[in-house]
Image 1 (tube, rainbow, N blue to C red):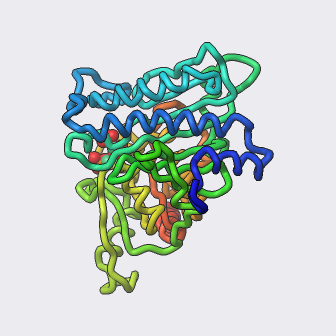
Image 2: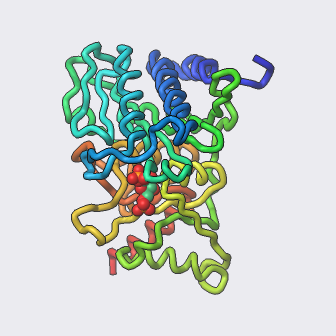
Image 3: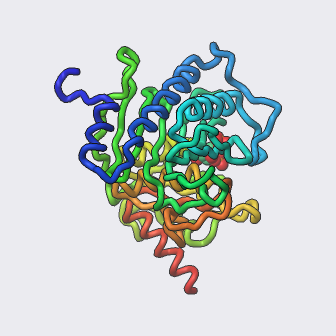
Amino acid sequence: MPAGRIKLSEYLSQQLAEHPSLHRDLGKLVLDLAKAVQEIALLISQGALAGVLGSLESQNVQGETQKKLDVLSDEILIQTLRSGSLVAGIASEENDEPITNPKGGSFLCLFDPLDGSSNIDVNVSVGTIFAIYEANQQRSPELPDYLQTGRKQIAAGYAIYGPATMLVFSLGNGTTGFTFEAASGEFILTHPKIQIPADTSEFAINTSNERFWEEPVSRYINECKKGKTDVRGRDFNMRWIASMVADVHRILMRGGIFMYPKDNKDPSKPGRLRLMYEANPMSFVVEQAGGLGSTGRQRILDIKPESIHQRIPVILGSKNEVERVEQYHREHDRA
Ligand code: AFP
């Protein structure tokens, strides 16, 4: 390997050597996930030629129509993890109940196998999001074992299937990015120690929901839109890819704030995004890169989960902007 080019397996060995507190098998699990990501990336890259675009008749536990690739990605990840004896239990957006691995293992893995899948048929970047926790070694995993706070994640990250396929994750000692090199079949270290700028002039939100937002969110977004004519004193830009992995990846690369706030469009839903396999893992990598993840009223990683598919409001990215939105929520709630 030419000098300066570090493969994923070499990086993981270095991390385990430098951090004796890391579980000895964590590197192997990340390599298994990387293998599954490679398989999913190959399917996605073939687009319509692979005959895997479009939707199925089925719906997932969220009541959402499943895309063929949602189910295929889910199957690839489950098959990969159950072929080994590292993961005792799996929870996925596409499965109502967690899946126990009869071979047992030291970890629990929760994932959204294909986030942003409504973008698949229009060839826009999508991703896989994963969270890894320690399993209870005394017995087979039961539902409460999965409902650990985000702070208990021992690793988390995502794959983004974009112009390049990348793997971005944290083992708790910073957030690092790898780019897949088709020629060698290796993930190569390209983004060591990612740092999110504390300030930003770019926000990401689906403004078609504006009439459903709470006051502090409307206040924050209106100030951004008024730009230098108002209190912010500078103009802002907006992006919304409607693929959380792509929007959050942009924020990790150049800063920004991502918002899918609580809205009263469907009062029964406290937000659209899922805590266990979207908000928690993304907050983990963002906070490990110097950003923040919040509901507006509470840090996401501190939330005590109530159910596997629980939804919550998500505001994450550049530290100073997230803190400003939290401040607006405090002022609103006090008033
Ligand atoms: P899909 O997986 O159904 O495409 O949803 C993607 C997502 O969960 C998240 O990745 C996006 O940020 C968000 O939904 C987009 O939601 P809107 O379509 O309401 O903008």
